[in-house]
Image 1: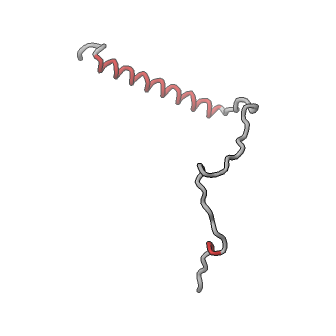
Image 2: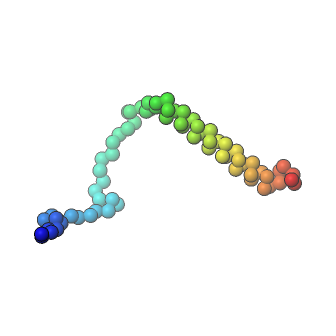
Image 3: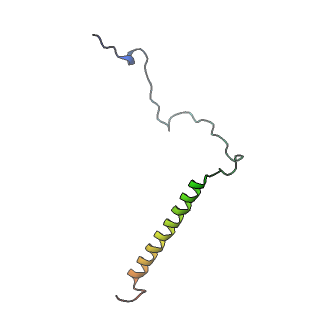
Length: 72
């Protein structure tokens, strides 16, 4: 059984994206806002609430470290 190397048939050249030729980007200004399903909307609202709650906890912790609430 003989194994042949497929790369011998065609050489492949790797080009780094920074060295490659620039390509035309798609213009998205005319598309408008995306439609969201109810599940996506609820998930994003839950995520927003979670982030606000975590920011509150961080603010509380910083104020506690600063001694705003007095010694416990």
